[in-house]
Length: 234
Image (cartoon, rainbow, N blue to C red; front, side, top):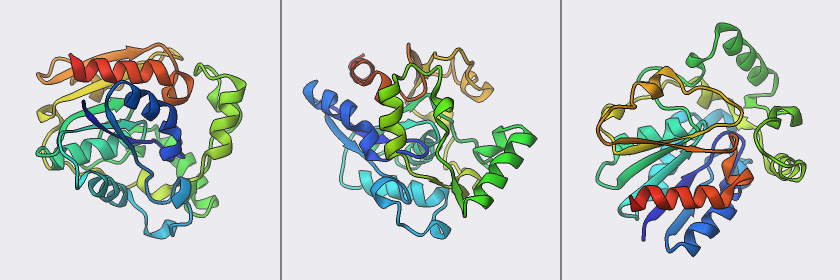
């Protein structure tokens, strides 16, 4: 039996993990989905008080009473997951980065975007009163989601606290020192970042793929749960 703490990416809350959490429990594990500040049922939190370190603190709080945690971070939450795993080696035994960003010390998530991309996101967050807006329906195309799944996602998504995209990550030890797995979702066909590829031959790191798109907890929750089970059982 393993204890999974499941951290959702941008726009999502604990709700996004419900099918995966159920499947993990059926496989004999514990599963603790997390909702980060300003999202999901916490959407009323004041956005001006929420930054990247707020989300890191949320996850530290979630694991405070747990032991031997398998910490899973999806998309944006890979940055949060990497920071927490670096901080808490006595609690987090493995970090799993699910089609996610990874933290780079001193750099923000948007530092990895093109200059034009950074300008567009900054302008959108300013226009939306401090939030990163929920993606338009067509942005889910090509990710293995049915129309019903896209509707289910978008009905529940909440705008994401924008400052978290611009705050630099801070690592208390290098990612290379973690025991970790990177899971790459292969639809649509997009390569991993140079930062992720640089970890491929690092002892303690492993890599896996999942034949679906960027929201596997919705498109393929059972396959994702089985893969998580296989990772911790290897």
